[in-house]
Image 1 (spheres, each protein chain N blue to C red):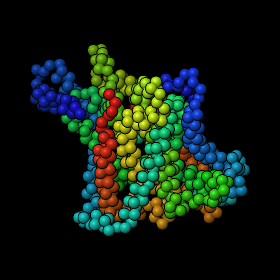
Image 2: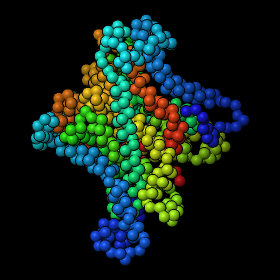
Image 3: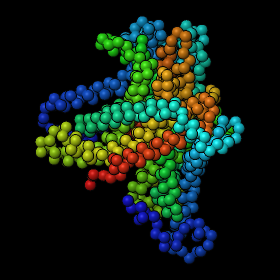
Image 4: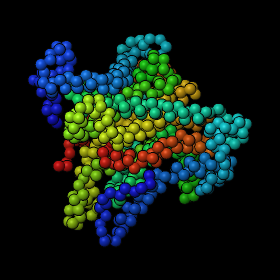
Length: 321
Length: 305
């Protein structure tokens, strides 16, 4: 909000580079200090800047360029204009994978946000034990690959303990990852298991910012926990919740690992999420241009969603203070 | 994860636990159970034999107690032995992958945190022209999702002839992430000016101040960020999968996925798989065990990320 005030006033006759060039010696101590600062800053920022330019900015521009080319890694990229995009629009598998991805994101984010919120509130209102917080975080220490393999085993149709329990309860076995209808919800829930603790801790941080006396006052007025949740916790947590939601949605759209390990896109393309399809196009069929075009599409979708979410949730505004 | 740091609780004093409170505790217990049971199940399966697993799938204790699964995962069994016990018999060098994972994660973590904290200090505490504009550029980098830069970065790594090397895996995140810079800058901004000024009066230079005063003061956030970076790079799968083709650069996540894909005709080698899973996950559990309290409180008070 105060962008203007944070930039240095333009009237100051400083600027390290100019000072060095002019060689003027009639400067105050402060100016000399700032000149030294500039040199040191250049030194300190240089490595990070190198990384930023080479591995973030350049690849971003290059990815956009490649999306307009035909490129198989072996021969130089060949400019084909909008061909890749035209092809994408007419590619039913692309639309299917987009649909599957959205389906995944909706289930994953819906369940994860609700569960994380519940855990965070329980952690805040019931106990603030660091041990419990640590336990909740443990699945986050696993890789998606490990989580995928473990749940593949637990949910195995014949021998998995999950299906054993379901069988013991008198239900039939469920082919969680082998059935077209079950596969995406199952993968979404596996990833909820891995990530929910981390999300819960982020929300918990937001809850800790709510002053305790607000709750005390409400309690004196005889408000129930349920009422306090809706009248105090939810409104005051809103900005934090909004930011966490934006972050997790972006992360959720990039699902790949769990799919690669558990179903490899199957059965019958039912879990062929966008990133898996992009990977297949690039490394299975060496269509780097087409894969880049789909990445650009994903980037556009993500930017649009972020923008809309930001607006809808008024993420930048706070109700506190 | 031992000592409990129970901070100010909001527990109402002198009131008996209500029904709602007990229900809430029951929910909490269920959450803990769902969180932790898979870990036990990994261990239980890893210590079982495949034949006994098929006979007693629901047995809570290891079926036919054996360390065969671990021997198979670590490549200590002969092919014949491995196949007899339900393994695929393919050669996997888990020690090698473990070492690769350690090298890559250490390289990324140490360099990234070091370079990012230097940049963060320059953005937070040094005065230079264009500072806010450059920082704005870094912030914009936060918006670019990882998936977008992966393909072009692969092309770049290939052009640098670093495909299938550990450096190739580490390079893209070795210098910085916008988040690390952003997070550490936030911390440096909050260090009182007086601390720096006192050191300046003592005749210390800015470089000295950074290394001797600011960096030690930032020990906790740096440690938390470091451990989280380590875990993230240890668990990364997509990028190493793109870049590494052979044992020389294969990391544990990729090796585990390959181990999983080597399904023998008879069905999955579950005990071997779970042993391999445990080998891949154990170092992070141990690392977390050491720093759990600090990390958990840093995340839950600053909302890191």
